[in-house]
Amino acid sequence: MRSIGERRRAASLPARAAMVVLCTAFLGPAATRGFAQVENVPVSNQVYEFLDRLGVRGILPLFSNTMIPLPRSRVAELLALAAENRTDLSEAEAGYLEKFEREFAHEIAREDEPAASTGLLNTLFTPAASVGDVFSEKEKYLYYYTDSTASLYLEFLGSLEHRRGEGDTYGPAHATFETHGFRARGTVGNRVGYFAQVTNGTLFGDRNFALSDPRLRSNVKFNDLNSPYFDFAEAHLRADLSWFNVEFGREYFRVGTGYSDRLIFSDNAPATDFLRIDARYGAVRYMFVHGSILTGYEGFGPLAQKYYALHRLEFSALGFLNAGFSEMAVYVRASPEFAYLNPFLFLKSAEHSLRDRDNTLLALDVELYPAAGVKVYGAMLVDDVDFSKIGTGWWGNEFGWQGGIFLANVAGVRDVDFLAEYTRLEPYVYSNRIEGNEYSHDGFGLAHHLGPNSDEWLINLIFRPSPLFRGILGYRRTRHGDNYFDAGGAFVNVGGSIMSGHRTPDSPTAPFLAGRRVETDGIEAAVRYEPVTNLLITGSYRFSGSTFGMGGGEASDHLFGIRTLLEF
Image (cartoon, rainbow, N blue to C red):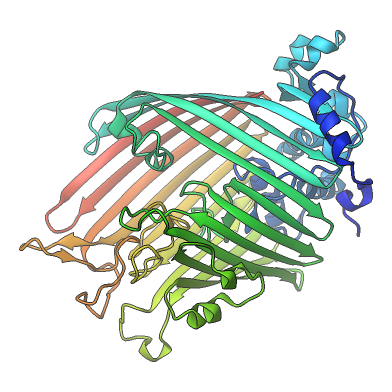
């Protein structure tokens, strides 16, 4: 079956005509005509959670969230498939579908597309438009322009957030954040999509408390320059070349099966710069990424640059199975290594041929759908292994494990879901014996938020009674074996940090959870309310109680947060 994008592609637009369209977009009337939008949907968009749930429900058989973001054209295809089964949706699910149909009206080519969107600046040129649309269910933009060959969507982004903490870690503390910026996206000639997002922010309040947020802790302007201001930027240019695509950009992406986090690639570190090729043919998907990252160390000098490569192949089969194989490499060079630029070369063999001086990892993952409303999934990560030493406790057998179950409409209660997930990272996982080659970007792990020598249980109850409201109640238990200093002041490495690889004087064995034991139990609750489309209000509460081994005592904390986000 041909995709919406394939059915609706037109002849490419000459470069000069494209420039004319883009330069006059702000002045011309907002004409409309549906065609394929090929720029990506950010990983933070609510639509991914909705599509994943419909996959578990059997409405979208074998849909997988293991490689996101997706282009808007692909998301539109999936929403169109969901619409074909509208009668099987609950009232809340139908409401979510209508919400996303308005958001993706251009890509779905709805006949009422002009009525599904509103632009604040467009009303200045269209007297018939109503300012009251600001408070409507329409998808809102600061300005938009579309015609048969090009589009531009411009959004203002603004948020105001307040956080408060009480407890042993920070004492009474509070922080308020203001952010503002814009997002511009569109497609030219049905082939080339563009996306740019820039936000700036200001902190008011306790700086140390604010640094508990990993996004702020990784922001150079806020952290290293000791400024109250912070900024973030993402952008990409994506070419749709029929069954495969090429993208150059900086954006967050995720690879893997987990809900608490991904074992393969996550969005905990700062966004990376990369070249990506992805292909989809029938039930098979492939992705190649080569990116530039930072070492996180000062001693490498100005010519040393860190890079990563990632290959992933996944397929669907038998009507109930998704399976994926991934391989990753991290290396430090003065320039990119040509072997790792090869999209089809097996990275582990390439690393061996380059004198075994880099860090390579392998991962396997599966998703099983034994019945409608049930998904069972698991993943295994292999950082390094010597099969002759399996079972000996040797430090170099470095594995990561993750498994879980997702139940939609648990116990027959509509719009209520249950999730249970377990993750375990053996000592030294993601680290490397050669400084700089750890699986990290500027000191922040590229994958799961857990450090090595840790495990975690996560149990969540999620309820979505309407498209206006989403709530979550969860329990989390984490155990970690941390590195420590002994009574004589010597550093003892038990494999508890991604930034501390195994050294010659370290023990040849690495028992799981050895070292300074830290155990944390946490209760989490969060609600999201969207009274008006593109205006979101979120509230959260988290309690954590920790015990620290080796006489470290105990600590408990209560964290509260409320945030208002406007995308218009």
